[in-house]
Length: 391
Image 1 (cartoon, rainbow, N blue to C red):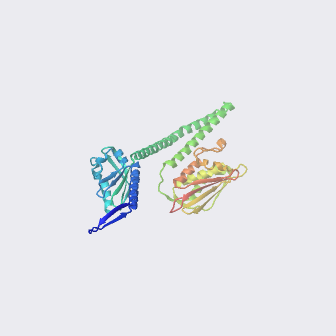
Image 2: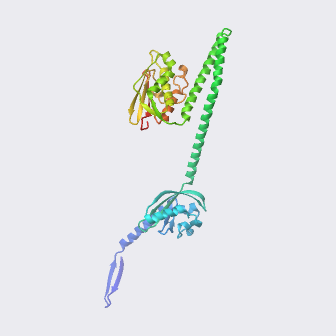
Image 3: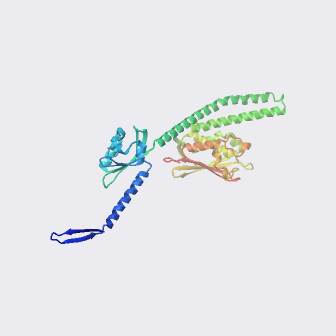
């Protein structure tokens, strides 16, 4: 309580008291809030400035002084552009502050790359808000120099890896091409040797030559498949043209004429659509799927293969049903990996057929998958973009 008195001038004195408790409590609350805000201000790990409406530094936290190697007496009361021998004199920053002062609009994550006199080149993210009460501006500063350096290093590493992969692909493609001719010579001369000297060699020698020819022919087949696989991966998508899938399927059947005749396979299909793709990769896709279906037929039944297609929104979904030996569902994801052969050497092949199919389908932003069960056959499905959409 505060006691006071007042004289009326005629000798009369009036005494009264004032209850100041509420005022004291309000002052204490304000002081507590101020200390609380200051503690938060100082605890922040990132530099923070409070600027007046005239852009003079009203306050700065410890992180600001430590990061920019300046002292409070060098900062408080000075215009931000004059700090640190005018190292904050950045045209883009001046323009942004003008926007805040003129239009009262905040800016967030404004990136500034600048050479600061005290700490060198830095990349900063600036965030600013104007307070409505007194027009002061809060300016938050985040140093992202390290993050930018890591991002650049990652981009450089990615580019180097891409160049290395391209170089490896070109080298492998050229190597597979150059190796095919010597392999053909090995096969041809070994076959001639076996034919001309068959009667002069014993059974073991003839078996050795047979295995040598077989191995060389498998290597030649592998190199051919590798060239096709790398070709699909390496070449850019050319101009897309209308391709009739019915004609593409017939062309693939022609290429597989011997295998179809030998296996007595029956291949049927529903009416297939016209798609806007490239003819050669699409032919290669059908050829590999048919070849795979013929290869993994059931020994007790003639192979029956059916191809169908259904429009599904922006894509065509194709299905190839082989009614063959099938496989365990746990292998369905593995069969599209390069060189993955579930049946070992029991079936001829290089393990690149389905991997090539996957590459071709993904070339046009589609996807490919399989459904199967042992003894129930395998259903290969894939999507290709319909006119006006992506798969």
